Image 1 (cartoon, rainbow, N blue to C red):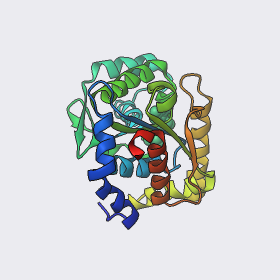
Image 2: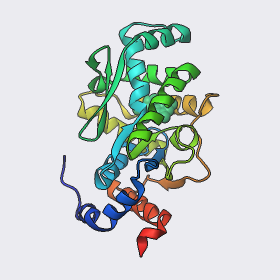
Image 3: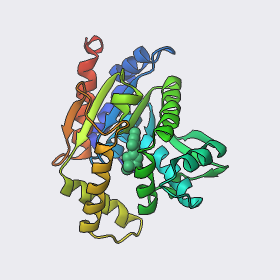
Image 4: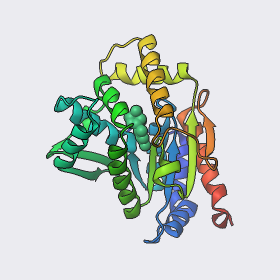
Amino acid sequence: MPSLPQSVKTYREQRRGKWAKFVHYMSKPSSHVIIAIDGPAGAGKSTAAQRLACLLGFRYVDSGAMYRAVGWLVHACALPLEEPAAILGCLERTPVSLTFHNGTLEIWMAGQCVTSHLRSEAVARAASAVATMPGVRQMITAQLRHIGCQADVVMEGRDIGTVVFPDATIKFFLDASLQVRGQRRMQEMHQVGNTTTLGQVVEAMARRDSQDRARTVAPLVQSPEAHTIDTTDLTVDEVVQIMLSEIRRALPREEG
Ligand code: DC
């Protein structure tokens, strides 16, 4: 893991003090802390959520990876996207297990860890399509709620604060300009050897955005209680700092 900036390190050190008190206070078995982070692709959710989870000592759950895992299954089994019943049937027959490695979710399908196979464009396309299917959403939502009942989590996605955990401890909605989101996604793709152009990335992203926002089941919408952060001109560290101060404000008891 790359070394963290000083300001973030300071927060990590504070975990022994104020943050440890906060974590302890909120970690009673009956009330796990749920930090919900929603927003469109490329808004910077994953990096900020991972860093926040690491600082607080919480589990990090990327709910999009679960939709991508179903997309991977569809792709691997060559299932037609126009046949939701066949997809759901296949999903029901496939043994799925979820484990945590260093606090991060790993997804196993039919005994194979698929986590490292979820970033291709084909899988992303299939994930966006299966995410419109009510049966698939129900299964994934149930699994996400189960995870949230077991431990304190930072969970990111599109409907975490609206559908999965409407009573989340605190909710954030991250957004950024389409151009900046496209640039971020393109950099990620280039890092894994994919040489897609910015124009192609932006176009695919805009298409998936409108699919995510327009679907009838659990569309991407902002919860009225969510703290909005426009990450267009912010560094990850700045986003995390804003989140930490909102978390602190939401828990005035820990301020004294
Ligand atoms: O965040 P991502 O790009 O890995 O998500 C993959 C797809 O899953 C994307 O089309 C949005 C969808 N998704 C969703 O509908 N609900 C979530 N909670 C998370 C992701």
